[in-house]
Amino acid sequence: MIEKRLTNLEFKFSHMDDLLDQLNKIVTTQELTIDKLQNEIIVLKRTLSEGNDQSTRTLEDDVPPHY
Image 1: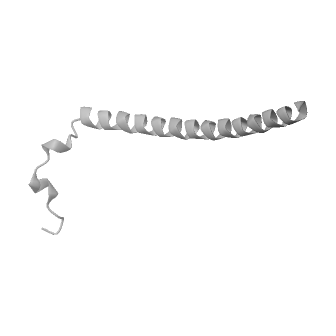
Image 2: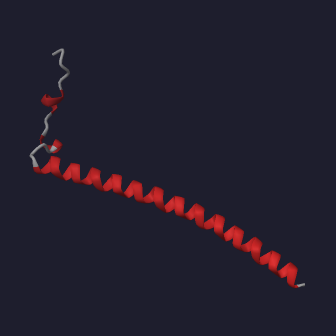
Image 3: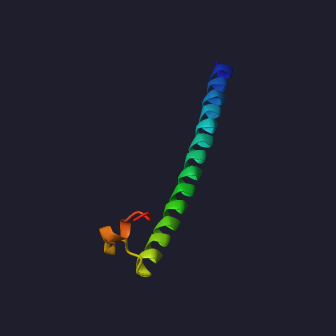
């Protein structure tokens, strides 16, 4: 009886250990994604503060080069 309980506990522990590894990988991936997005926001803010705001463009700015 005790041996069966011990085996069940070992099985549960093994499953929890695998689950923890999976969650760790997910958190690491999300952290990298968040860092990338934060860097993109910094670049966008810098671009806007330098006066390169795309909202000030006109249709004449989008004329293809062959005209």
